[in-house]
Length: 102
Image: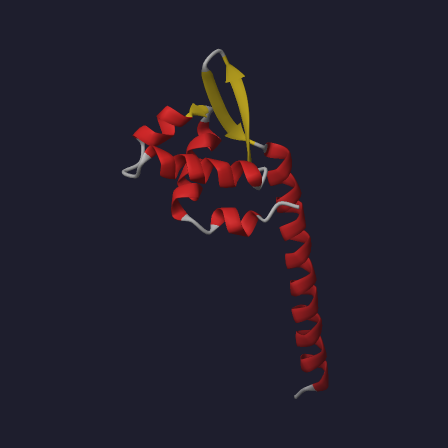
């Protein structure tokens, strides 16, 4: 299962994801956008791939990276459900508190 929080914990990975949300990019494109080394970018890409947040497409000698939209949709729905449970619980407690007048 994807640990989206692990992947999103690093600001470099969040920026990579933001860039990929606009359109596909090569590793060279990503390296050029950061003040860190190519091996560091490669490590961030590997983590994002491991967590299934990005996919790759090969075209000749180039590898293009893009967001894995199905995984994002899954995590959005999961987070939405978790937040609904938290809010339902909190609102239920507030209702009980107000009804008791305490």
